[in-house]
Length: 103
Image (cartoon, rainbow, N blue to C red):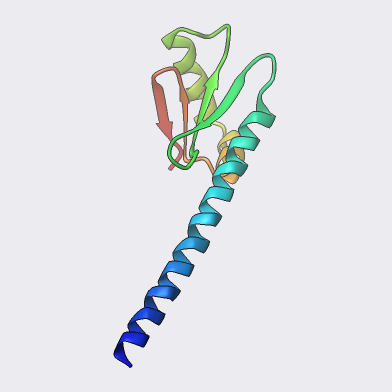
């Protein structure tokens, strides 16, 4: 009888873990799709990381470190931009080697 309870408990844990993993993967795919939708001629956006929580920004005319620093500084000081990025599920933004957390 004890073995049945153990197996039942493990089965519930496995099902719960599978459901949680599926939800995480769906959210990750949604962030990747959002980044692709935001891309245009002026800037390319890509979601990266194990669960696509970092928004990487690539701009053809801003390949230097100063340009990336300025872009990220502008973004994180704007409550509207930060809100939009957080609402999409991203926790950080990156341009070049510069990465800033939105937390």
